[in-house]
Length: 117
Image (cartoon, rainbow, N blue to C red):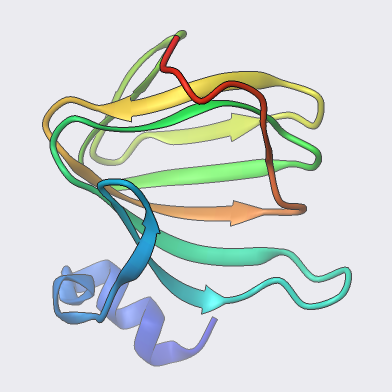
């Protein structure tokens, strides 16, 4: 990860980065898009009430919550929470209040259900 991105993450400068639409009420800032067998790394910004439907992790996923609260069926994860989702695991994700997370996917996820569980 380039030093400028590391510095921005550590100091809240991610607030000034440009985000593009990703899913309804979820925007993305790619730090490193998927390339061949290389993992994807991005920031996801959830608006209040945003959700990602039930999905299958086809590879390892790691998340660091930078701001707000991200939730799934296992609980609520506030700022500073580190979440690991193993290959083969499934869940849906939402944020009632909005949040920003740093996420790394070994492989893209596969959406299973368009409704929040």
